[in-house]
Image 1: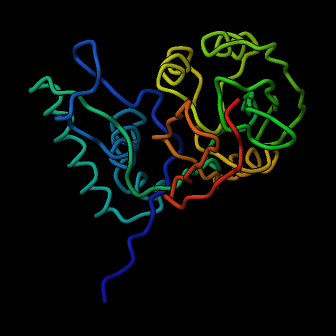
Image 2: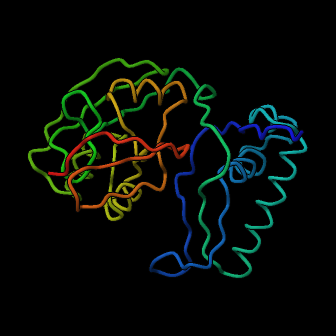
Length: 238
């Protein structure tokens, strides 16, 4: 009987998920590097860990690290030599937020908010709930009225309030690009109580969808978790 495929721990998602040598949309033919392949490159080539230390950090075997690292280096070489587009997404991993340093570990999380729940349309949200975090603990919360701001203005509003992480439901491609340019990490496709989603994020169990998109049509919004299990939040597009 084959052994179950164990998820590898990664400390964080890459700040940039696509590198394209020319302007425009990602072509159908492109190289995709998985999150765990990227993590081996980050830990070994950027952080400077050896393979044993990398394996310990990712909670997997040295053999698995070697395979992931070799594949990542091969894809990186193809990207550089062939000039192909490369994306960094997908794979079999779980976020490990326990390895973040303490002391000056501060962040501010924003959640699209309505009646205690994660509002399911970023561009139409009337309210954000902001959470100030220090050493993985919530130290303060506040509600931020968007005053009817549109997509680009919402990103500007978040940046002005020093938000570095956004948890939301559906979100369009333009807003995703604007968030990336502003340096705000996106966790889309989340559903349920806002406080519970932030708690899940802090303990590394947040269910989200990195490929989330938002349609402006239809009455309801259905989201899927990162593991692919669908569930409807019952929200309506305004």
